[in-house]
Length: 176
Image 1 (cartoon, one colour):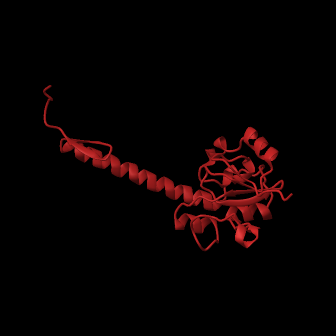
Image 2 (image 1 turned 60 degrees about the vertical axis):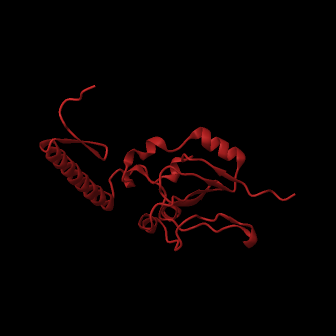
Image 3 (image 1 turned 45 degrees about the vertical axis):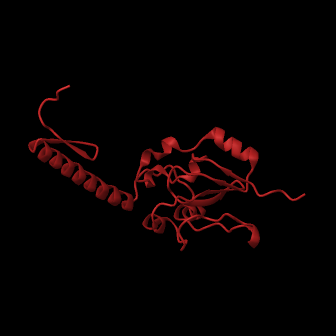
């Protein structure tokens, strides 16, 4: 009897090896919510052909210990271009019964990186590109906070306050 093609799914990342090292991440605390020993034990017991997962929004298509792990967040075309060379964006086909079964592994930035380079957790210095991007984000966030505070002070001076995105004009005391 032919073994069926098995796909397992989870929202959470089952293994720390499926997330770049902390020093390479824009959000270094991401590792705190990635990797689950109980989930990985279930996956290894099942031994699926492919395990699809989510949570981190980082594209990866990588085989570890005989299991293909796939995360394919749709994101925006700009986000996808930064993480993969796949030319058609949208859903990823992992099995095509009319064309031989399992599709080939897709090129992803992090999948390729870890095929070529071993993880080195002894390195803690951030790569220059991470520092540059974080500094630009910090500048943009500071600008946004400053703009928001300025808008709030103008609204207060005009007698209005904001709740969410709605404006409520102050018209004196309420009468019940």
